[in-house]
Length: 139
Image (cartoon, rainbow, N blue to C red; front, top):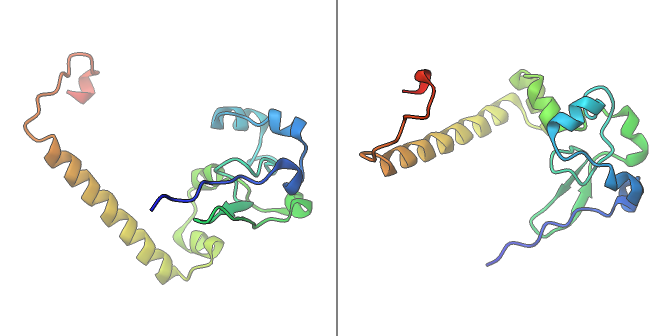
């Protein structure tokens, strides 16, 4: 079964014009330079890192932060939020979980990451790697 296409909301539906959409930064560095998501709320709901909207598996858009209340939003960017290095209790509260629920999700994520690391390691076991171009610390 093919997954439904991800449909970003139209700019007019979420509070900014087509001209604003043309000004959307392409990189996190551009966002930082403009202070988007850090110094001021980010208006670009169609960015995949924006916390103001989410798209479910059916392609339906759910607006989480009302565009008219955007200037009052505490967080609008998942990258900026991750860089703040929140404590688990703060993260759990932001995503609506108890601390125990958050820790369960976190353990599951670490287990999946570890299993993938082991799979990749085993897949490449015995494969000779060319390290000539790597810095000394990688040899």
